[in-house]
Length: 359
Image 1 (cartoon, one colour):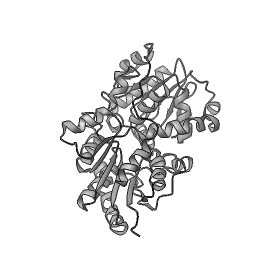
Image 2 (cartoon, helix red, strand yellow):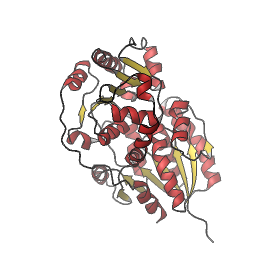
Image 3 (cartoon, one colour):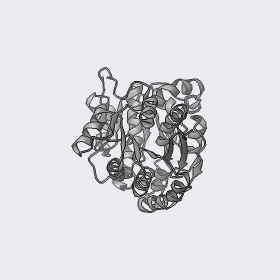
């Protein structure tokens, strides 16, 4: 009897763990074999292990333990480490998620070793080539044989670049996971009570994109705006370790206490609880923009553009950049968004992807 198709999945960052939680189960339920490889790009407990525990993701067969470094160093070390793993595992296909250095390393390994590549979250474009993630997306898409697009906009972006073969609009895996896990978060998370928060009476903010953290003026503007907003109501900031390190190098964290609550990174369930309970979310994260939309929480994006243009077009997301005054204006402007059209799929995205991978 021939062996089932074998897929080598490369993950390395927390949004990828969320997506893999659902798709790994669907792959195995469909009779496919999977080798899960964790590059170690996110290695802090709060950024990695807690996600595997809460989402019951199968333990990785391989952990490359790459750790931090510059973009070039990190990606190069991943390439060096992935090649012997792929040679040993002999997969029929390599699967990557999103737009991180782990994504690009998996894609380039597949291309160099002539192994078919599947890309989850294909076709996203910010059209800002200053973003490392934009290069990762474009290069990965142009290496891919199967391209799983979350939205019609993503499909159209690929078509403009001449990519039409192997393209499928599947919906968004992350939103499927959110819908399954949000009730679990409400039943189990104690985050609100531990912080003394009331639903609908606080702001939630996240900052991690290099375009903000690596530009001292932008990061200072964002943090000053959050501190100012905290004079009127609680502002909760689960802080990425890299952002914390860069803030320390630039003169330290803003004064804390009272309404400004700067936290260590929180687990997935606690983050879902904070998101669905916030009055307003301010973020430079693509994933958090989508989650805010699905929860029906207005969002301010701390960037000059977004890949998730649909959330802006519907009125649920406002681009404020990193300007102090612009952020305050956006946060203090009353919003009455219209009804939310379904943008991100039917709730059965993982099953659809597993079916396409079997073909």
